[in-house]
Length: 246
Image (tube, rainbow, N blue to C red; front, side, top):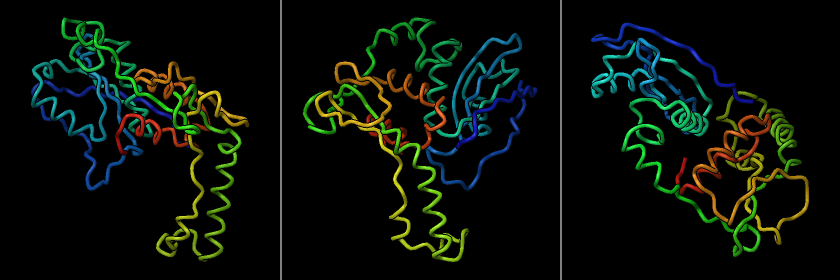
């Protein structure tokens, strides 16, 4: 299971000084790597800005170089998340509920630009049934038996490879067929009422066959509280619905 998010605070003398924080170098960055959610505050505690990044030092330096309000920075709260999707979810919730002064994207409370953004309807994606590929889906579901069996299936697969190759650490000894036979993550699939097969499942209701960004946000926040969440392909489903590749 992935580590839970955690928070730290730093209060360096930012006014006019160079930011000196560790920089991530030489990494192949993927959506499943840890991401940082940061909250920038002034000396009174007012929330100036909320953002996410994989490289906090570089991001703060960019703010320092390009944002006039950076001279007011007195404190930065940092919260880490196991993946980009979870960080994006937390960022959007923070912006919409905490109303940082200098955020524009996702903001709904302050100023004329934010008010105009609030009137723009959320994009919605039509989701069709996986079974008939015709009717709009009424739910997106995952089968819980497969979810709960996945950890033991992975353990058995890894044990078998250890015995076969005589090495539990050297991936170089694993053949392409070995990797191809790795158990697949249990998948979320959209179904209409007529096509939904039986079985014990966890359903996310789809209204009118359409899913919005806000739906994905709420569902991701809800599912992140489940111990079994990371034993499914939820992230892949979200990227697929949004037309984005991780």
